[in-house]
Length: 501
Image 1 (tube, helix red, strand yellow):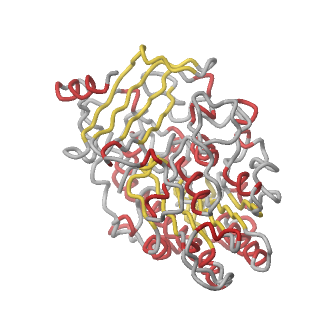
Image 2 (cartoon, one colour):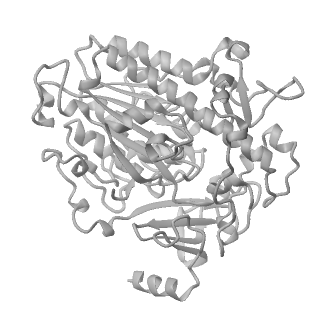
Image 3 (cartoon, one colour):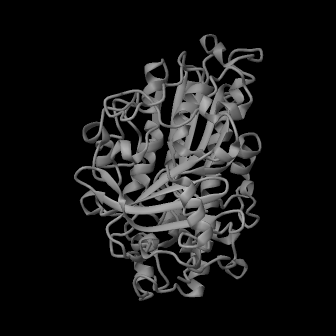
């Protein structure tokens, strides 16, 4: 596929943005002197600000991308613990969010699509905001935190997770409607959607509304006797690329380069190929008349996609900047743990998994870290399958997870992705549960990424590892872009043999 910017959707082991700023561990504007231990929580509990963004790849200055203007996020990262290899457990919004907000894997939540609620479907599992709420926190949700719809019971898991009903911007309903003015002067539901904010419905955009509401909540919590857990979910840079058109000027089209590695990896099995059908449904992409599933995107349109993605990231960055400035102005920064994460990316220190966010936040806040889940754990309401990453903060009081000790080459991250068939089709990127016939499981280590695609029974939620449909193996040291599938190579067979029990 010569689609450039979209080539990255081929991979299951999706890099996510994940960094934590535990400033409250060291000083507090509310409680006076420096804190020697997180167990001073009883004297001065730490607030939590969890910022979740949607489909953000490592297109940030703090990840070495010199083309991107992201000064506010970069400044946050400069004062934070920045994870270079954080992996989503499934590269679909709803399953990924449920995974890291419950601290459980998709095979435990049994959510692989958008069409079920885990408390009914799998088990009455606790969430991380619910755990904080039960420990005296005021928990608040703004914007896209849980995925809207059935997967959060049409309520963003309220009232379990939140002290108050979650806030959703009123302008959310226009995100995928005909609000994008095309070259013909008419309004379309396009992929590329720079807008004049004054001309859009309600004269605003969802992420701007979310920032304003989050700041109002911070102002209220300034004088609260209770600590807060505030989750703010931003829509961008998720498609459509709908952003204030002035951000487009930051990235002149003549300066936009093409994606450096547009080709399909050698030996990629068809089941691993993502035909990005969601993008094909946008009116401006439909007008290109691309062949399905392998038709290349014209070079000029590739540049426009990249320009709009970059502009969306810079727009997101300004919203994060406004939020963090308000936290500073209210003198809350030094008593607040700030966590910034993406639910997954379009691929973009030790390996970590996004589901480790839940136990890590609990540990940093001085709460008891929930125990590790038994196998199976469907009957256990409060436990976690992720690791407490406290050791990375070099603090002795965080209850370091014994699973983190030892050789860093033993670190492993897992992710998975469902497919309806062995070959690309209309629902390959987002199959409903009943249509899932193949499940891909990835193991990612420092040295390699190994993926096996196996048969899957959606009625029993069971993968059949004796029914192997395809495999992938990439040695990331010699092949960092994962271009050469070594699954059937003699070197690959030697490694796979060593993995067998």
